[in-house]
Image (cartoon, rainbow, N blue to C red; front, side, top):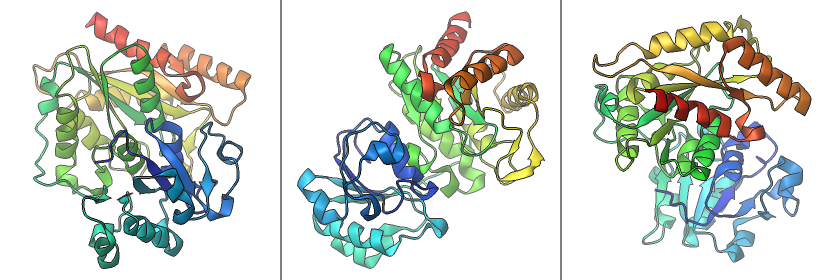
Length: 357
């Protein structure tokens, strides 16, 4: 629903330097379309790059009123607050945005469209998009994506928040530079807002989760040629005791290729350090074994892990290069940090696999 050309203002109140603002920060890093202003009274007038490290020339203002001269068309809630409720300062600016003729997009669990005050403030021709909703007419997955002629890559993380979405978007950028036909399927709120569509997997009843992923992949692949590529954003982790997202993604996308995403030097679940991670080789074998199940007999060769996206954000340059080399030697697979060095090396691994099949 959010078009690439829409002029966005981010409602980012206090979220430019905290995990609460991860949705808006992801949009600032990866959205190709215009972001004309960020509303954050805490940092109004400051440099976005100095606060976040993101090299994007976007003014930070204190209120919706101060953002209006930049001609925004859509206000996007850039926060993911605990409990999924809209904080009062954000609500005031969201209400002001609607009254000023803007549309409103939100990835919160709270349905803003069902809020009488917000709904009545919406102007004719404008919309409120609650993206964290189960799609209509859901159906159980039937492995229909296996019949697609294009390649389908699924990012699998060794933990939560290791960079699955960022790795996929880096590959999208690399594909664009090489004129490789490519589509990105967002499966979390930030990915959906960046792509302008997708499926919020955590809003779907578990029986239909594979089916909605399947439908999203089929829709994304409609206009792709046989040498095209669908990149599916991973969620959760097979290693995390609180995550159930990976299997529906595997079943629904019917991937031809897998990308393992890992944080350098991590040996246990970050927020549950008592739970150790398997070795990377064990994770590669496990991922490939699970991906080989639930596939039609005529689906061709089972998917393989083609490369490793290594998150080296906590390392210096030389440490990062050493970590990448170590993982590559250990697994015999291409490895790179696509945020630090771009996604070309990882994309090349997928394209080479395509040529050999």
